[in-house]
Image (cartoon, rainbow, N blue to C red; front, side, top):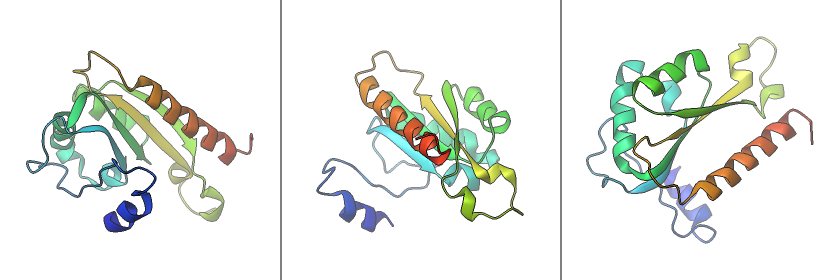
Length: 151
């Protein structure tokens, strides 16, 4: 998947980095190396006993103005507690799963809605990428509106 994504986006986003690492032990990754970390699926699969190690490593590899964007099925009453305990202030957004119509009626309602957490590295003093983040959030809101049939 990583090789495919590198190839797909190399000409569009030449500075975009795609990495593979153990999220609870990223010693091979330089500190303060990433502006944004995106998680789609890891948080759902990771035993919550390892969540503190994961969030600590994320804080280390993100720049001071960095963001952690977590797209998960985990509801706020579960995930938000872990983020706050680790010192991550987060915005929360519920987004209809764009594939919910293909999921069938017998599936849990929790997978019909995606939970998106945008967490700010608490060490952040400056925010030079706030405009980029706001644009990304606006795009996410547009996608959610389209999934709800509002656009």
